[in-house]
Length: 224
Image (cartoon, rainbow, N blue to C red; front, top):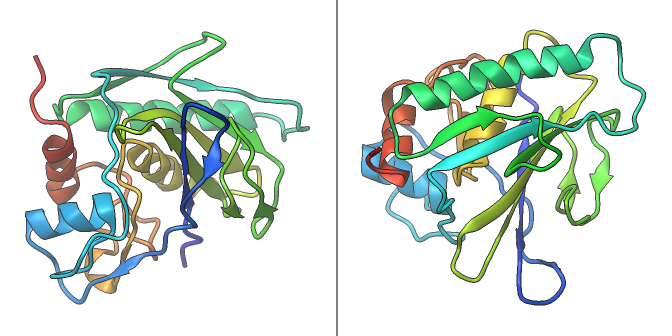
């Protein structure tokens, strides 16, 4: 059974960061959807035939950097190395799709997307903290994006709990990285279990293929 990594959204305005949206829930589907309907679900939370729940957000940069920030929490031996291995695989999966966006791991002190290992336990209630997380409930993973008035994502942070298992880590990392690109809504329903990285109730997916690859190409068309 999956502990879904929740996504919180904050809006970056000209003044201080203002919390805007609450946690997103999975959008229920009964069967596999056409690509266009799945794209609307994943990017704006629209149920089949329904209206969007939120804004469509995307990065404007074609090349994004990702870094791991170990922070000050006492981490289990080898945990950062496990995180890096999972992140490297996730980056490779996204880049293999050939969409108009590419990812690269960096050792620089700043990056577009920051991965933070944390000892925060599953079920911890998070408050809005600029550069750390939005409001919500911690799972084994938790992703937050910040965006501007033009709906352009400007920063993302992914929290990975030290309580995560080796079995779940590859899928959870890939899901969080994928969602940080603007796919903020999970898919609720057995039709997508083991089929999509956005499935709310399964950690079986570790590749970006099929409709997931199509979603990336639709959101970031073409690569020069």
